[in-house]
Length: 89
Image 1 (cartoon, rainbow, N blue to C red):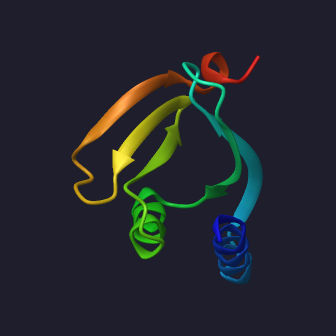
Image 2: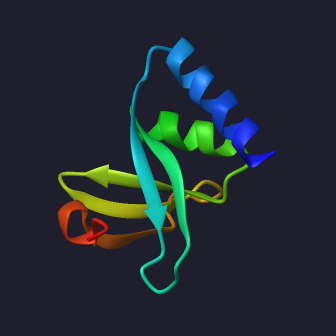
C-alpha cells in the first residue's frame, strides 16, 4: 500500500509540473531507510501536499539547512542540521 501511495503522489507532483528528485530518508540511530523524493516548491505548497497525503510533518530544506515542520501546526519546526552533514555516509 505504501508503494502505491508513493507512486500516486509522485504522479500527482509530475502532473502539476513540480521538479522532483530521489531522496532516501533515514534515522541515523536505527537501520531504517526509506526511499522517497524531494520536491522543488514553496513551503506552503509542501505543507498542503503533506496534509493532503495525511503526513504528520515534512522535511524542508532552505539555504542548506534541513528542518522538520509539522503539517498540523507549521509553527512547530525544528532544525535538524545542514543537508550535507546529514547525508548518509
